[in-house]
Image (cartoon, rainbow, N blue to C red; front, side, top):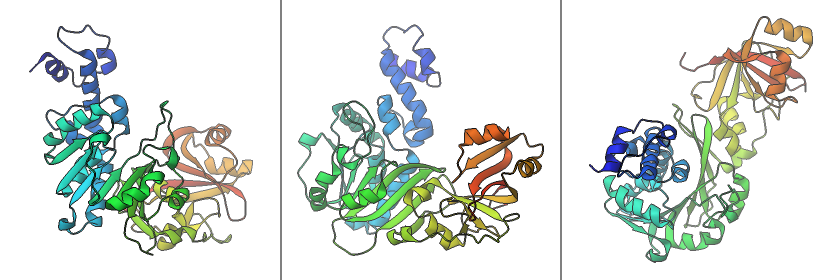
Length: 402
């Protein structure tokens, strides 16, 4: 074991900020060691398989921040397995934006031939070192100018860079590198199916107008936070409707799947005379809202919308089979914003979790007005009902398996 490896092993769990201020032992490349320690610590949470693989070398912080997590990479693998149910059809894959190689390392084992392409020579060197350690001895690593000219891939994967030359984040498809809008015709001649990973900030409707041959749109989140969009393109012409898949990883829910036309379902608004107290309030997860399929979800499970613009839904009884699709709450009481009514409803309540939907004040403004600290077991929703009346709903978190 050389000096660097010894230092890394000895300090693997130490704070790299403190380590950077300590005296450097003779023969130790401190910059390299800090990069490896920080990368391994990040991988323990984000990429446990890589963290537990002996000999993996980690890249600079930016590459670690930008790479997929093990959860989202595993999800992509499951999508590819479904796209190619016949193992004999999994002939060759090309990842044209290899990066640190996380997505490639999960998808490539499904294919007989695997090509990794990356424009940064340093990342290519890491891939040549790391991929065999992960069992991918058949992987071939290239820079773009050395990659083979091949037009019979089964699958191509791209994760275009979403930063410009100044390091600023960008979202527009045509500004990403490579420009998938310009390349798509060529790519569709090279492969049967293409998967493109894009920013969760992207306008999905605009992307559907810009991309040809889209068959599936995946909105992928982890524990309620939207992480990435995946567009699956097919070279086979067809008239089938684009399907939407909303996956909230880290929960017990299966992906919610519907068609593009389901995004046009009108809201089913709750009648004014329905009493809220004793019923259940439901808030769709971030992936459902990003996909714009909340009305389809509500229709499928029989929930009614409080107001056309609220994205809060009501049901008189608990909804079954929706864990991870909605956050659900049991309504204990509600009030309009008359001072006396609010005071009577809140009583001696000192803290609560506060959510604002279709309401004129921010959470901070309303929290100050109500003199409530954050936290506790009470969940308050400030919103507008179907009468156009501003109301405050007092709830408790409801878990389906209770």
